[in-house]
Amino acid sequence: MGAVGYIAIGVVAAIAAFGFYASFCIGSGVYLKTLCRGRSDRRTIALTFDDGPDERMTPRVLDVLARRGVRATFFLVGERAGRCPELVRRMVAEGHTIGNHTHTHSGMFPLQGRARMAAELERTRRIVQTLTGRCVRLFRPPFGVTNPHVARAAREGGYAPIGWSVRSFDTVALTPRRKVLSRVVGRLHPGAVVLLHDRCEGADRLLEALIDEADGRGYRFETVDRLFEIEAYEK
Image (cartoon, rainbow, N blue to C red; front, top):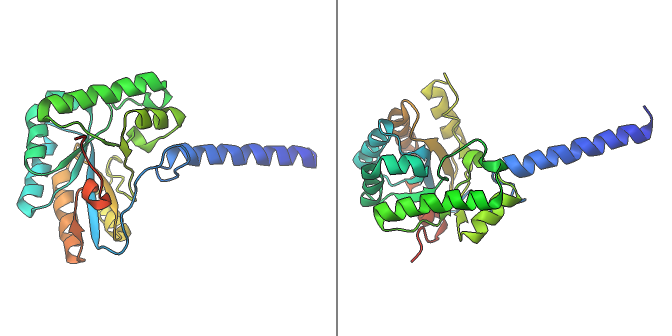
């Protein structure tokens, strides 16, 4: 293979790598500008939970938050919210913030067209509004994957896209909770947005230990709308 061939391969590899980064790195900002970290001069962090509500684990997570006086942000899957209306109402009643995480959280969501994406977001928005009287503005794309269709659906829906700066990987099967905790604590920083999941086994114990560790390091907890000083719901 000649020099031209090697250059061509290099160019293709570079384009592929950039495409992967643009779509799969929530903080890349290539397609969708997301809020991933707050001000670094404040020792404040936001705990966020995706994929709920879960009938068994979410109540335990809410119990820990209530006992510790911590408010968090929950990005809800619409079809699960519709099955757990009392949990959704409890979140709002206890001062937590709710965001949109699509209706089905399908692995095919990033491959859908803009119209289908918009329909999923609107369906979840209506469910939450029916249950709580609030029209959500915060949105987190499933798996953190973005592309032009996701960006357009979010923009046209008037959403504020939220990412994260600390990923726990708490959904990885068989990973000990102490290892997950160590990973998160080791990456905490002022303005951190921590990604957790309230559907995972042991989510309540992980949360309690994380609050202990963060509190011991002098961190305060806020919902993401307060962290970024934005509106969580349409007025």
